[in-house]
Image 1 (tube, helix red, strand yellow):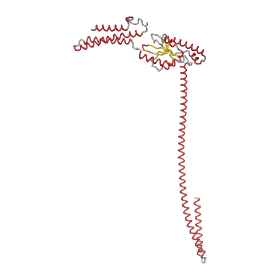
Image 2 (spheres, helix red, strand yellow; image 1 turned 60 degrees about the horizontal axis):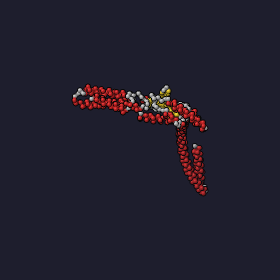
Image 3 (spheres, helix red, strand yellow; image 1 turned 135 degrees about the vertical axis):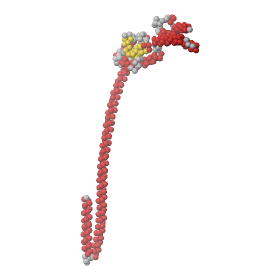
Image 4 (cartoon, helix red, strand yellow; image 1 turned 180 degrees about the vertical axis):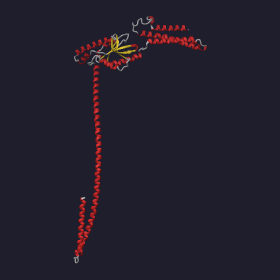
Length: 399
């Protein structure tokens, strides 16, 4: 507004001055007797004034155009300010959202890092526990200081994965209790002892540099092995156990056995280290399942008796029913009769086999008087001959 007012006042002053000058020139030109040159100058001045008025008119138009341009520019500037304000507000809003999202992601990342650190700490703790357990197990297997029950704990953990009916715990034999017993066919048990109380000697032997002291400790350990063999040999009972028992000892002790392993074997005791006990038991059990005779002779005898009674019933049916039939079934009767006699002969032969098998399985000098007809006439060949003669006699009777 100040600029517009200044330009307007200036234009009014110029226009007023032009009017005054024009009036003066008009008065001068109307005076009589005026000098022609002066009149020409005045006329020329009047033309200049008119030209100046025209120029001032053009200037005024330019000023008005300039005012209009300024107004438009002012409007554009106001609109630009408004847009800048809107953009600034939107940018501030977006910046706030981005900052919030970044803060949230940073917090989540920090929480994740804390969780990972916690998990790593827990895993390190578990790894340390596993390492300590492995070192303890290695120390026990190597014969480091431990109680007498350490070997039992090792085998207990291993036998826990066996079927329940494969290993019996706390088996009682001859008034004594052995930690484990391998269950075999025929209701037999193989005792397995794993106690080793002489851990102090093994510990000293592992750390002793003096050869003389080491030799004395070796002698004490070997004496402990002999006592262990004598103890395990008491678990052998011909009526309930096998003729062999297992004595498990620490791995560091086993190399000191030497000829004691053969002495123990002669007494029915197998010496082996803790690490070899489980593989040995598994292989022994597998071989036992493959080659051992697991037939219950009493059950077999009862089954054979049932078959024999069934054959007798069949014979009665043949005699009382089929023989009285027509001649058309005569041939069938003879054939069935022959089959029944053959089954009867087979039963007689099979019934004689269990006694023969038990007689052959007994060691020399044992089992005397246990079977009827033992002696020179009780050998397997004569028994089979007697069975065949009995079958032939039955054939003749049936005919």
